[in-house]
Length: 64
Image (cartoon, rainbow, N blue to C red):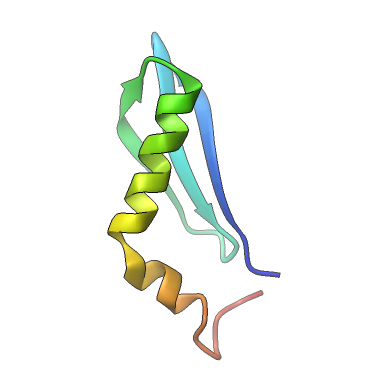
C-alpha cells in the first residue's frame, strides 16, 4: 500500500517536520517549529509544493 506520513519530532526547543513516503524516502525540515501542529502543517505544505513526488506514486514501477 502507498502511504505518505507527516510527522513532528522534538528538535531543540520545537519540532522538526518530516515527510516519509512508502518507498522509504524521507524529507525533514532544517528548521524547528514551535508546535507539533505547525510542524505537520509545514510538512503538508511541502508535499503540496512537490506534486511530482505524488505523481511518482502512480507510476507502474512505484513500490507499494
